Amino acid sequence: MLYRTIPKNGDELSILGFGAMRLPMKEDGNIDEERATNQVRYAIDQGVNYVDTAWPYHMGQSEPFLGRALSDGYREKVKLATKLPTWMIDSREDMDKFLNAQLEKLNTDHIDYYLIHSLAGELWEKVKPLGILDFLDKAKADGRIINAGFSFHGSPDEFRPIIDAYNWDFCQIQYNFLDEKMQAGTEGLEYAASKGLGVIIMEPLRGGSLAGKAPPAVEEIWNEAPVKRTAAEWGLRWVWNHPEVTVVLSGMNEEAHVEENLNIAGEALPDSLTETELELVKRSEKKYREIMKAGCTGCSYCMPCPVGVDIPTSFELYNSLHMFGDEDQTKLMYAARLSGVLTGDESSFASLCVQCGECLDKCPQHLEIPTLLESVVEDLEGPDIDQRIEMAKMFLANKDI
Image (cartoon, rainbow, N blue to C red; front, top):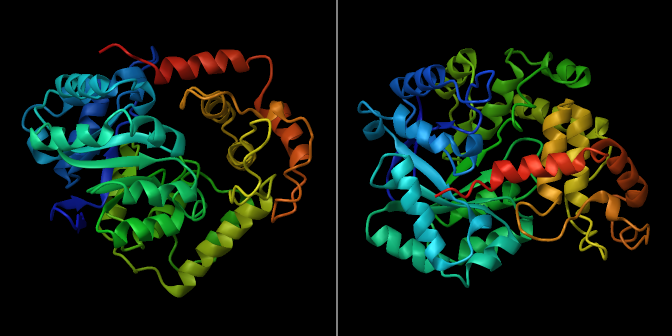
């Protein structure tokens, strides 16, 4: 196992972190505790020392599971991370209430790496006046949390102001070779690292989409490489090639995945990919772009939409559906992200489009946005969207404290 150092505190963290959002499941929908515990403990025995969870994962059962799985001395072997469910916070008192409940669920007296969950501009502006920075200062002072950070799902221009607003120890961003310009992106990664923050990476394989069988046109490019690698190894090595990255989280739920990721994490040094290999990744990224249904780069020049459509997210999920084919998961994500469940805002579905055309002159890619939004509606909405919104609410709004 390779390790990288958090600049502000000197912690040496395994470059592979265990993400507890996609644990193995039983047919009844519950976590397969025996199997999941064996996977977590095996990874720790092989050198993984960073374990990440959050309040809503597995319908609220991930944290209690880890409280049990990390017994028998395993809690002392890892840095444990969990997250404050920002969208459920309505007062300063809520922050302490959730943290104290998480300490109890996780059977611990402190959280090593505590994140403000899923920040974007709207949520950041919501929790700031509620006293989030005072909460972090006091929770660090009394020892309930050791390091303070945040996870980010906003637009690129929202990232830097959050970084600059507090003396963060670390942050967590989505990053993979398809998302260099999405959310925080490469610019955000480099900026956070320049400020001395540890950077934790989520979705290095886009929820597993980059780990399975690649589209045939992409597979042809991978096959040109002198050193043969799986799609998962290409994706992980590309992220680890960046020296600014501290830890890459992997939502492992198959024993073979654990073993493969551990093997890669023993070799993936920063700046270790050759120029030829980096060119193959770039060609693969370009090929993915070519086969996307919407050539959207996520620049958000089209925003704000006068009727509230979230155009970039609509196209992101529309492309994901057609490139990777996970219809159930993509439709659920569409319902969750555009219904307002995450932020408490109004819905921003593609079906709100009134064909005003205001976005057309703004798009640097010259996309026929209103026409493309009609296709998004056809593929991602439908008569069962209300049911998917309710499923998203159940996943995200487990308020039992």
